[in-house]
Length: 53
Image 1: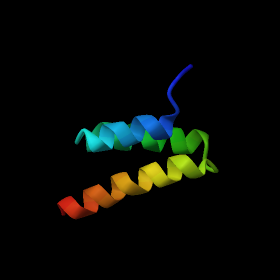
Image 2: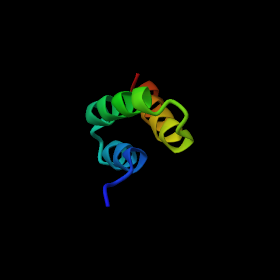
Image 3: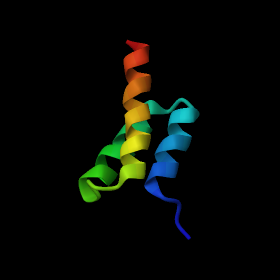
């Protein structure tokens, strides 16, 4: 069974690969705009970007 995009985004974010997490998250959200788990995972990617600034 394939890994859910939210899990993939979370793992990439936690490993420090924010750019790849951002790219996968954006593409997945465009296909599934109502996925609340994906929205949550993508929020944390955005948060980590903001912390870096």
